Length: 113
Length: 112
Image (cartoon, rainbow over all chains, first blue to last red; front, side, top):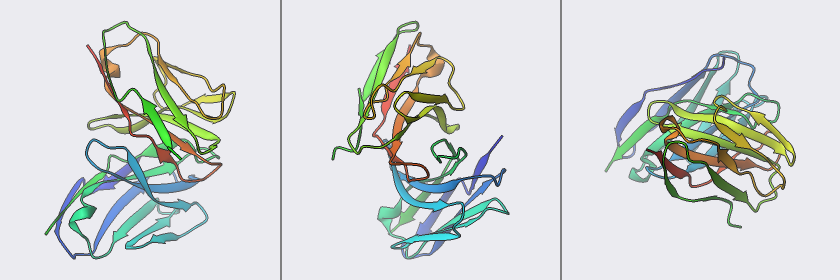
């Protein structure tokens, strides 16, 4: 059974710091991996999607990498800002359509000014 | 586009009552899913659909029914609500195979 783990569960950093969030999964047979952001009491916002054949994706200050063979993904946030404070969720697509997502429990990030 | 919409935003039920959570998308997305989010458990997949007339079970399907008669709508039915179904329910959709998923704002359900 696929399991997704995110470490650390919580992280506090000062504004301007570069940081890395980690995601690991137990079964390398995934079709894609998606990073989301969730603000308190809100829905999920898609940040980056990496297909199983890709190694990384970038969007602005965000960079996500995928190493299927080792079962790991990282989300790199450059020059963090207070507005980046949120919970970040990693999810792997386990069906051929990439529709059935298995989620990690998230990393809650707090960026102080 | 309104994106993915969910109604109601909040609902309180008594044990044994039934209800339907509504989900609609106006992006012509083929794939739709339902998740529940519980403290300490993360998001778990309930049911999903890869097109009209096609549904499949996720991790936690018991106590829930779905059908997909149109591309736009994917309702989730609670047949006989139980306190264990107290949760926040999210609907998601994606355009096609392997595309990013877009989530609705959620329905917060309390079963007394």
